[in-house]
Length: 127
Image 1 (cartoon, helix red, strand yellow):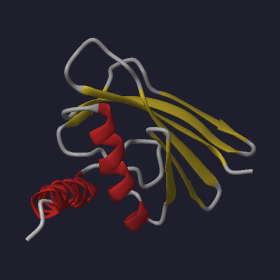
Image 2: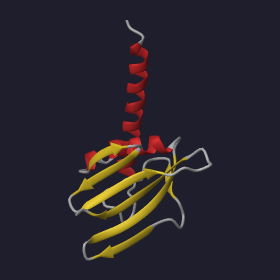
Image 3: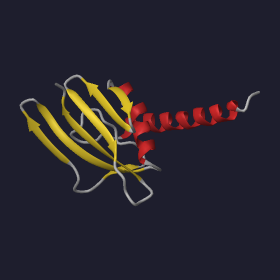
């Protein structure tokens, strides 16, 4: 047995726990106005920080979410939760870009002084 095994096992357990959390949240609640974007368990919308506008090209929106242990873990949870709902996602530089049909999502971390994770999700029409 090599020393890599415990690390691999720990990573696998962590990924599995994120996946289970993401799937459980997908059955519970969705962010109003954002098509098939779940509100991950333990995460809440920041009051007064949601905007939605309907345009001829589609919906523009922004929502701020707080909760969980870190912003990176929130991004990882959404990276697992969105593809089963039809979103195609790519992670890059700590952010997540997703597309589905006529919609695009951009999920990015926001630095805060608190311990909870904080991310911003932006919705816009795909080009």
